Length: 119
Image (cartoon, rainbow, N blue to C red; front, side, top):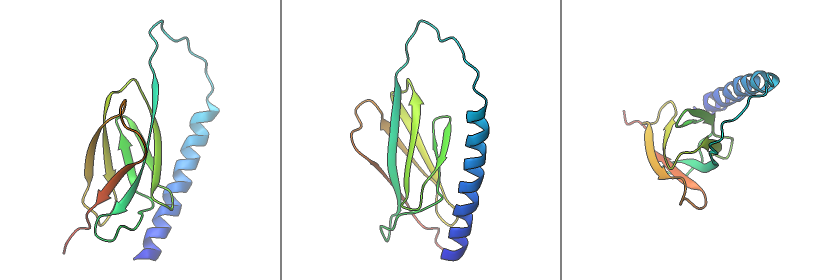
């Protein structure tokens, strides 16, 4: 099972890197409006609720941004002008988890715990 998880993580990272490279290559400048919107960085770690083990390759959707956890279960994403954000974490063999966080008052790392699916 761990071998399959590692293969899935490597595949997801490869796809993510390819998509990011394509997006960053399109460098079109835009004019912003007079309203300033603050960018907030949300970061955290996803772990197995039963074992406390960090989970790699978890799809983490924060509002309209999707990222994946690294090999240590860490994730980070920047959101624009949001005060309350929804963090949705999904991984095969685990129940999806949603966490709502007030991004303006959140200090430190957000911990998301996933429960394994029971047979």
